[in-house]
Amino acid sequence: MTDAREETRQQYAKTRAEFEKLGIQDKTAFVLEATFATIGRAIEEAGRQVADAFDHAAHFDFGPWRAPDDESDTPAADAPAKDGTNPAEPPSAAKRAPAEPKRGDDAA
Image 1 (cartoon, helix red, strand yellow):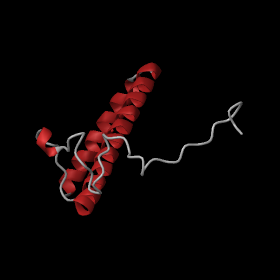
Image 2 (cartoon, one colour):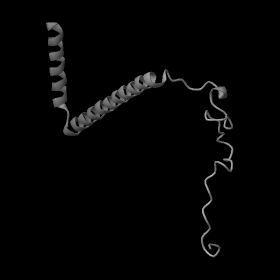
Image 3 (tube, rainbow, N blue to C red):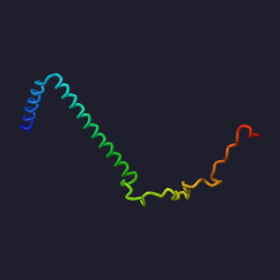
């Protein structure tokens, strides 16, 4: 293990010496590129963690998710709902809300 640490220490010293040889613009560009690359990797990892958490939560709430294979997996637009109503049909007179009284000249 000591050899690995020593090798890392030597590599760091070499990289630091090479960095010191750069001009101010190159140093600035290097630092900015390294910073944005690190931020990008962090955002990607955070996105993966959030996606995994949602997948985990969805699996326990709803079971494994899968995309519909074909149209037979999705209900037809005119298929009755579980309560027996058909969302594609207008409501019957019994289910309609009462009409509001007219306003204006026709009002009594």
